[in-house]
Length: 307
Length: 308
Image (cartoon, each protein chain N blue to C red):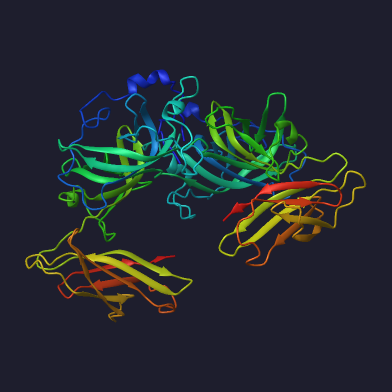
């Protein structure tokens, strides 16, 4: 979905209170009754007004009340992250014009009016997506160009940006220098000619002098099969240029090697690939994390993603 | 999406000037020395800020991409192109500028070392605003109705004409919604000027038959993996005597052969009788085109089979 046009909202644009029964929402005469199953509400679209005092939001014309304490989900995990006050923090860009996905319930009041109450609210901070070659990096300005778009890491506390290397480790913009021409993916929002990224995934591998570097690009735990899938890459050892032939995979990072995976060198990427897909029922519960160690000194860990 | 109300007349001011021979209408952009394996891929999703129909370029969240001649714009998310770039930019209709495009393509470095992008698929999202809630009121004179507290009308834009469907997936008019206030309605479209312009509205309307009961087929699915069908629906009471049919005949393929006689179960809350047929595995080697359901009280319905 869509365009996030963050306009600055003036106080005058907020809805005024307009009735006793549904204070900040306009009174709307309801139908005589609600049919079974018709008391649900789902709305997805740009938010046009947010009223803090009466805790209402208006999305594509439908005004909905937010119960006290209901947090706004900002990372699509169905768990609330920030308060309504934090969402409309006047020191930050206004969310007005951004996309809200809201679910709730409908009810008729004693006067026959219909009103809506939210039970979940998701504010989409990262709806603009950009995947393409990393064209250039300006380490001084801390910006980079993906495809034809200038990108910077977002610093808005409601959606702070993260920049990842191939192994999912946090890196700096400066670490991307030298990786021009590789693939990068950035999600965030585009405003005033700049893509403000909340998450950027790169193919950067930060090397360390004297050892090789291990990057775990995938660590999945499959609940239905109670199995794990671990994939990644290993660089050549700095100095010697040698690739390790195997890596050691330690589920739970408890010091026990669960698998010795063979490394196959990709001459195009100049990286060694490794992968271990365990048999079913190897891990009765999610191991939490995995550690991969190379005999040439590199090591890495990653939290399992549950599928 | 926040759909811009800019008319096509504003396009000239927004379009990029020519900037080089290789990627004419897009700004020149010095590329990296090489593209790594797999890095020639492009995907962009966001609001479109400029469309140049002469040089066939679109600019989405700052990235300018060439649309090859003949590449159609998908408007219904089936990955098949539907309208031309010129049709998308029809100056007699609302401008797409500000609407969301999802675009995939490829990157290439030209002989001058500049990088350019060419699309291989373009989807324009005409129905990204979603509204599901009780039908509050219907104004058949104005051709509008209220869902939630939003006023909805059926879109007449030829790039995304709107449909209203009854419970069985049949086309109905706004008039047919009268009397169904308080039932659930779902609509997708775009919100502009205080009105939700719907491209698809699904309702719980059951259009009554004249002298017969009414059959609605809510679901007709063919499962390729199991070579089986599943058919579900409802039957109204007969307008003649108020009775419900106790069975319906299900003809998969609508070839005159009854494949199943399904019992109905009356739902006193909805005031409808429900039926369901789940065939055994391997009952149908290939996907039947449709299904016909007939009630002994005279009602019939047909629905195209969804292949899943």
